[in-house]
Amino acid sequence: MWITKARLRKVTPKKTKITLEFDVKEYSEDFDLLVTQSVDADGYIAFSADVLKREVEEAMKNRSIGVNEQGKSKSQILRGRIYKYWNEQYSGTKEWEEYYSTVMDALIEKIK
Image 1 (tube, rainbow, N blue to C red):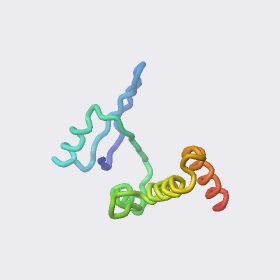
Image 2 (image 1 turned 90 degrees about the vertical axis):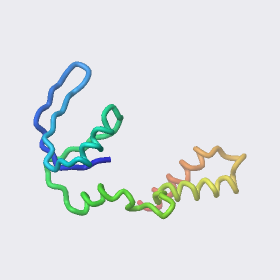
Image 3 (image 1 turned 90 degrees about the horizontal axis):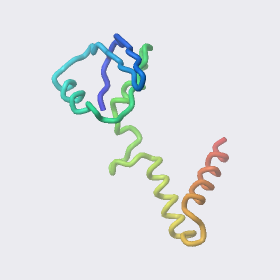
Image 4 (image 1 turned 135 degrees about the horizontal axis):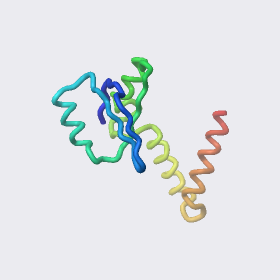
């Protein structure tokens, strides 16, 4: 993943694609290597003409926010715990997908 300041210079619409041209404001050899490795890779792009708040920018750069020592996010840990409980209590009587959906709906309603 790479994040840098840029200026959207040109948009070229074509029948099956759109080409975007950016001027990069913070160019370095490391950035060049990251971009080169990203060519022909599927991914996502976010562009904002607004100045991002420092907290949001730092959160985007710091991928470890909300991740524990084993590299799992809190949502992954919660899903794992729900699965473990289902496996111990209901495995064989209820389908996992149905159980998980029911538990998540209940949690969402409780938080509302």
